[in-house]
Length: 177
Ligand SMILES: Cc1cc2nc3c(=O)[nH]c(=O)nc-3n(C[C@H](O)[C@H](O)[C@H](O)COP(=O)(O)O)c2cc1C
Image 1 (cartoon, rainbow, N blue to C red):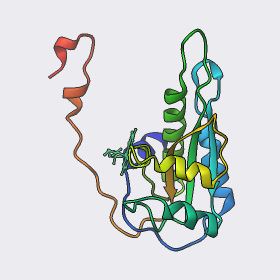
Image 2: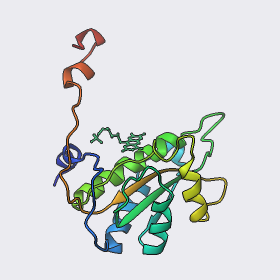
Image 3: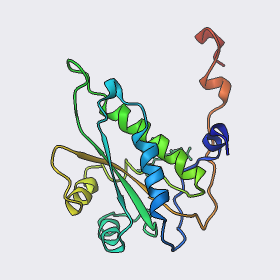
């Protein structure tokens, strides 16, 4: 699969996952893809914790309410540090977003499904903090997102996207439809 095919075939998956063990080599490749992403002033503010131990996985999935990715055989937790690049400039959000997209694409390349789960865990009930506590994450890191990893056993649906010509154009905004 070339990069463009990988980009075009990625979609969020929210169904059930196959019950299996994800090879460590695949998780390491996904992590490596994430850590290879660009970061503002190369501050590398994103850190990752992969969870493949069944007991830890269960503890983490049990604090997520309402349930999402409850059957995922592995998870990657995305941690972010608010390190300033220069003056008042902190690119931590951009840094972890780039890392997440890299990982989502590598997940697709390896034949797995996933979903960027950030909104659900960072809302007012702060599920992210409960997960961080289980994983002994120090207080200077924010746990901002989880990525389930596994083979989809249901259909991966494609959501509607706005038209290409309504979101992009050449040379001048007047050419936008
Ligand atoms: C910042 C961000 C937060 C997201 N949080 C969630 C989430 O909490 N739960 C979820 O099911 N999907 C979440 N998503 C996935 C989006 O809903 C999804 O990307 C969007 O609907 C488009 O679908 P696609 O990924 O199939 O292109 C999030 C995506 C982004 C970029």
